[in-house]
Image 1 (tube, rainbow, N blue to C red):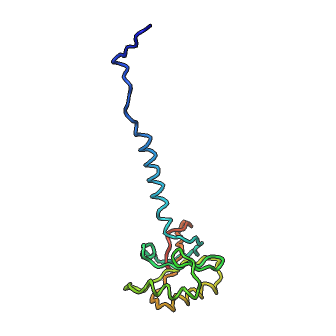
Image 2 (tube, rainbow, N blue to C red; image 1 turned 135 degrees about the vertical axis):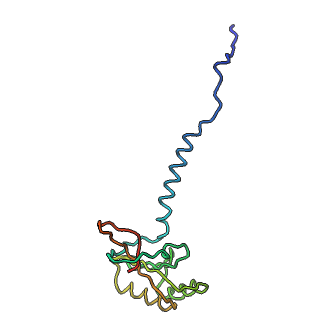
Image 3 (cartoon, rainbow, N blue to C red; image 1 turned 60 degrees about the vertical axis):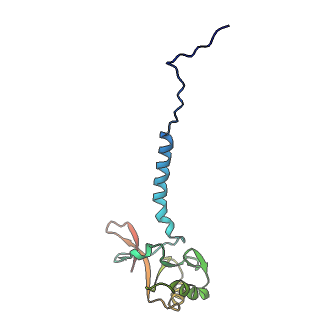
Length: 150
């Protein structure tokens, strides 16, 4: 019978290699950094494109009140679908404690004009002093940039 001897030069490596974990975490961090700004717009609409548009930084704020009208005529306040009858009172309730009565509207470029105007009427009935119509600005190169006000 043989005797098992352990040589000092052949020790078992018990260290954990964290390099692959760090690589995966960095990739996830980059993915979340890219996706997070896209989550602000909860309702997907194709904004109309405009050449001479003014950039509105307030529209990207977290507490900005945004109304969206989709292609099929549905109206959303933030991410929640609302009826046109409920739109005015819900906006008025959100504007109660705000100093600036500003609302931003994102309407699909192929939405029915009558539905968009009904939504504007509902917003105006809430006592909104300023309504920003959001568009996509077209650069000189033909590419679209950030949402802007026309």
